[in-house]
Amino acid sequence: MRWRWRKPCVQRVETREDFLSALEAGPPDVILSDHSLPSFDGFAALALAREKCPQVPFLFVTNALTRQMEIEKLSPGVADYVPKSHLQHLTPAIWRALRQTNTLWSRRAGLNEREQVAEKILALLDEYEHLGGCLPICSQCKKIRDQHSHWQPPELFFLKYTGLKFTHGICPDCFRQWLQP
Image (tube, rainbow, N blue to C red; front, side, top):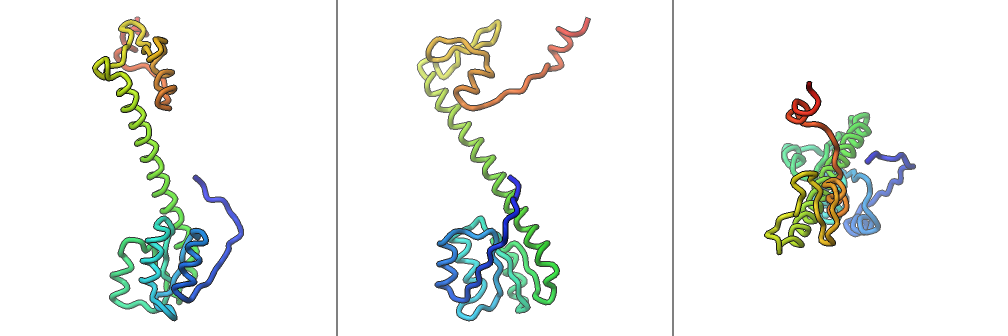
């Protein structure tokens, strides 16, 4: 997934209630927070953000850096810290956080897809439970017989029932046996 450029939309909030309303209206692409806010602190905002929209990168932009905050900012959920005295680092920090989040969610999506395929394969094997969980396969051409007694090549069978796609190649043993004189 690639990020598409769109006009930035900035919303500033100062209270816990306004922050919650903004999060409930729809998750932002990124959250920038000062450490010391007028009515609640940045760590309270971080906790709310992790609860309401855990996928959104959270960055502290503050000069209120203390030893405690330096340690706590490394806690889960904080993508980065940019001092207000070094705002030239803010744009790269935002891009880095967005890329990391995008990569993380892409990986999670990939894991979810694999889990779905595994569930489909297990469901398919359940359909063949009366045969001991075995798929009937031709010993010569390797076609698989489905539940309707149709014989299909493995790549078509698995595509139809699980969504798996196959690539084709020749293993070293077959290469030696069939392609060498």
